[in-house]
Image (cartoon, rainbow, N blue to C red; front, side):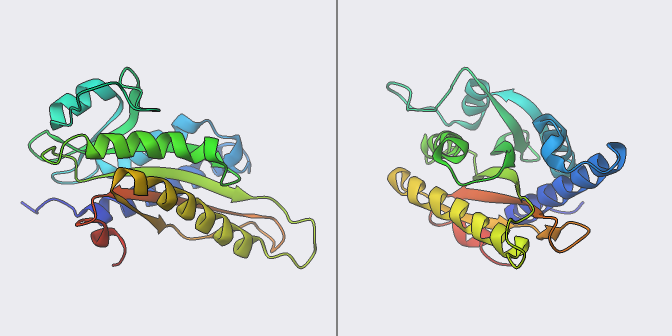
Length: 221
């Protein structure tokens, strides 16, 4: 039996699942961009991609408090801002033994790197990850669909604008996680353009949050 997938392999599989969601929605909607799709459409494909393999399991809409107890990620004291212990994680990935391995929050669509779009989920994932150094969580991920529209200026390249947006999202997350003592890195998917060069661009990507000793496993092949 093959061993468990690496964390990076799981994140890349989820990104590919998100790209498949885009393609299927484009087909069934008669050509609409993914901006028109409900967020849970992306979430189901992400979970399916992560849980589709030996020793890889995923569940959707899992209670935060239950997941953290199962992982041994319990923290005493008042709840932190955005902790939302009575809420649910969009997706939870599990080790082969059934212990939680990663919490995933999904956001779609994202058009800008505003705090309200990014920070609450990043904060929640960080709080989960650092609740206990002995928890079974290996990493957490903020996975998202981002797009830029048709540019107003003729020579404004949409693919470059989208890459710049991804960079701003990563920078915003990296700035926030410092206060939690963890690290963040962007795992980008491919940048896709529309049928014409001026149709805009989109991508599925993920900001991975991990302890300093483990983040390097997500920053390369």
